[in-house]
Image 1 (spheres, rainbow, N blue to C red):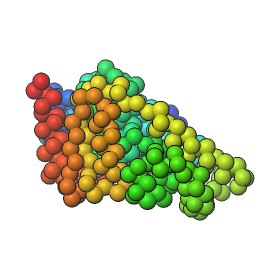
Image 2 (image 1 turned 90 degrees about the vertical axis):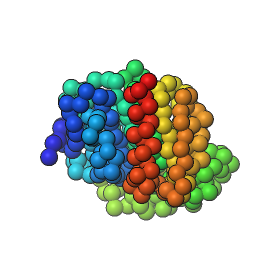
Image 3 (image 1 turned 30 degrees about the vertical axis):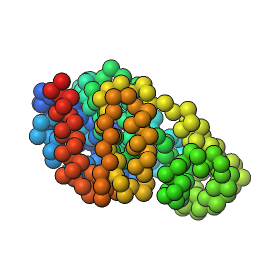
Length: 277
């Protein structure tokens, strides 16, 4: 199985398909707590024509897992750097297309567009949004929120963030308890750190403006998605110029696997339309 070593010396698992294709390279980015295997149905249809690259982020799938928990590190920066190193390792340069799933994979895909504007030929966001659940604290917090809060995330949090934090913080601490033995931090500092991370996430959302994304963009949401509700996909489509929105009936957060034929048909049609223009 192919691995490459990142700057910290961790081995990261990756997969490459159809390396000699003359067509655009397609990069797949999985979400938090997922892996490249999530995209197996998309890989089946893409690898016959395109060069396809995907990898398990640090701490995910078959890649190495860090020995210590870092509560301050936002994994998006590390994943972007590791992807850049993998592309160098494989000798891949733009243009390429990016497909990102969920809040983390989708947000990283958007940020790569910002950092490598000239290299990204197209962007596809699957069940994604505008929220950075990019470290363990933020991810636990978001997972504790009910569907109605996620549907109107900023409006609800702006009006009642203190109350929501009071209710969720004990559960965040409990969820972290098995991993905190390596974290030298008093309970008081831990609670302050949790608040800093959540308020930081909210401020990032308020300031976030993806209008810098100029490449053709496909946004697919699921009508039954409780994790990244369809409203997030609709909001992204309004914010990103030159975007196409598709909301799939009877599809939840794992729509690319649940409704693979529908997702694959829309994805392939979108990429073909770009290739032909």
